[in-house]
Amino acid sequence: MPERIQQCQSMDEAALIDANAAYYRAFAARDLGAMNDLWAEEAVSCVHPSWPALVGRTPVLASYRDIFLNPLQEAVTARDAQTLIDGADGRVFCVEEVGGGLLIATNWFRLIDGRWRLVHHQAGPLATAPSPSAAREEKRSFH
Image (cartoon, rainbow, N blue to C red):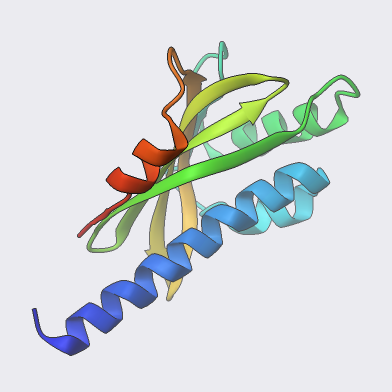
């Protein structure tokens, strides 16, 4: 693969990982403004664990507002990120840790005006936790 293409893909992947990390920072800080800034303006959707599908920017952001206002909401952290980039679409698959439980999450981003913007988030229960060593060995990016 030509060096220039590899450099672009590496930069895209780094920016995608940074956008994913910004999502979890906004969640941890309960920062609705930061969360609002991450989501695309149109064609967004979200499926929180045990929630119905939310379609549209208004219901998606309202869901985060409600989660952030819940004093019993436990911290959410992410680990073991894997990326898949296909043109202007980038997905990050990761394990979320919430209150001692594990979820598998997909965060789907779209490159809009040179910036990765979130278009879909979905998380659900993870039956078995991947071992840290297996996750490191299998860590790869798909382009």
